[in-house]
Image (cartoon, rainbow, N blue to C red; front, side, top):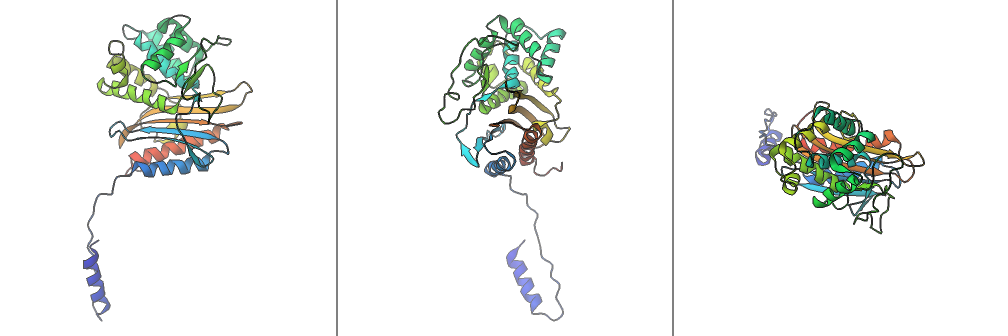
Length: 323
């Protein structure tokens, strides 16, 4: 609105006995783009509102187009230093998939594709073990997966054994994340990661699939191809689980993701996670969310937390779209 023009017209109308109607001119302008710091404030508020006392949640967002990113960890209504070690659970199957493709000389045959589908979409442990034994190779395949993650620069992600019941622990791994003195979530000795490591891995898949560039092809130029990345992303897109991050976005928006949660030895659920590339109309983005509960995480409450975080991020990238 032109304030000066409007003020003059209104003043004249007040002083008139018969010209009491005023037309005020307005100009339509584009709304300012939302700022990522405002999104961080919103995510903090969501975590504080929806997580229980003592619960800890870490959220990593990457905008691959602008490079904007944040890594936010929260507990007791306070920020924590991020890069916290969580039990990786089934999110570790994304590294297994990448290590497997790095050792295939050609596109996987139909039987292998089926094993990959069961590993990614249904989180089948037997098929995960088969992929490691057959394609990564041998009794020490989990260590090979870990070494691949180190080569990629992901020093907080490891797998130290097969998934079958009674599988031996092949290596006790110390990482910067699990050696912190301020936070210890008692993550599984067999598989651990951080929200940031998994976000970086998903970003690597995203760039490799889009243009053949990024972390994966730069690190393994003779082992991983753009076509292989497209196959891996398609496998992740076929994960139709309508929960967690998926629950916070419109149904028809493509999402390539892997979920993970695990019951501890006492039968209680403490850790939930979801790592994703979301192909939204307003822009693609990578979202990695991990949460841990000190006693027992009620699944429905955890799912609601993930969904509301996901909705907030989706609306940030799509401010002018009605859901």
